[in-house]
Amino acid sequence: MKDRRGFSLLELLIVVAIILIIATIAIPSLLRSKQAANESAAVATMKTIAAAQVAYSSTGGNYGTLADLVAAKLLDDSFLNTVSRPKAGYVYAISASGYDYTVEATPSSSNAGRYGYYSLPDAVVRYSTIATLAPTPALAGRAVH
Image 1: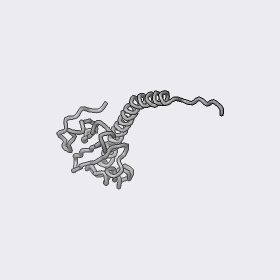
Image 2 (image 1 turned 90 degrees about the horizontal axis):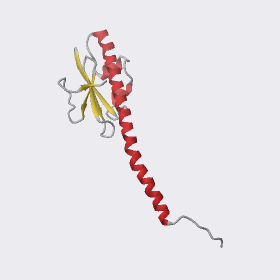
Image 3 (image 1 turned 30 degrees about the vertical axis):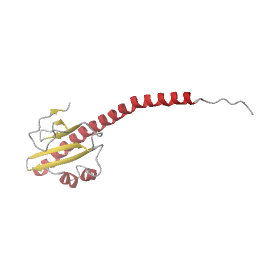
Image 4 (image 1 turned 120 degrees about the horizontal axis):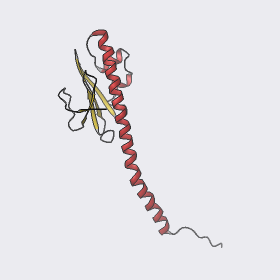
């Protein structure tokens, strides 16, 4: 028989421990990167919805709901079912009445995003922590830059 020398159990355990240490450092960083990407996409989508509201109101004078904006072909159909299929981790909702509206983007889970976003007819996208996000114009969030 040939003398074959392999790895000892101790050497294999050391390699596994090093891999686990690297994974514990890398995985949270990747999750934060995904959250940041979802948040950037949510802000961009909020700006798109605000532009669609301006275009919609220029034709009829009033602001519209998500269904109205999709029917007018100002937004795509994917906005109608964001509860079951979030767009980049966020669920969108519009409450519109005449010359006023509030658009909200809420993270679908705590891993999807850290902040909720909202916008009023001034088209300024503001953020709020998830715990304080409420569907009222009296929201006190800071503007997103």
